[in-house]
Image (cartoon, rainbow, N blue to C red; front, side, top):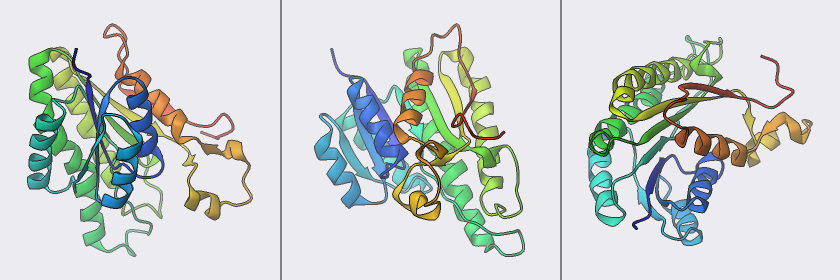
Length: 233
């Protein structure tokens, strides 16, 4: 039997790598998408059956090219995880409008391009999962997140529209709100005084995505929120 395929966009040193490892452990062949070829190559060597692809998901031409390559090399993905993210800090008067647009292209349009390309095969198979990793900015617009929150809110609404469309056709779409600071090298440097349990572990995020992607179809989730036990909300 051919191993199932999981495609992951935005494979970096944190959540993306943890997702790749979790799905590889679960028997999937992982298609690893990111703009950093060096990082991808190192992870590809560590995961049996994985294959790396340099791809900017904001470019529909690149998405189409890579999608065809993934199908040729690994097969049609049964799980697609949109983890690529574009972000920026600043108020609406401070941000460069082009940065806001760039983030929209990565966060929202990237999800659209991936879903439009891979959903038809999932519909044909009568099963599949598309999961987008989001965060609290998808639910509220704080003053300093004007270049980011609008794009994540749009991403969440797009995912909801997709879920209502694809769910009755057997394809599960879910949105994961990560209400936490992810445990990464740069976040540790930014909050050096914080204890370990202030941060959310990339592996814990990956475990929850795995769970959501494999829920029984009688009990599908759409909006899933995760946060450390001490996080105020």
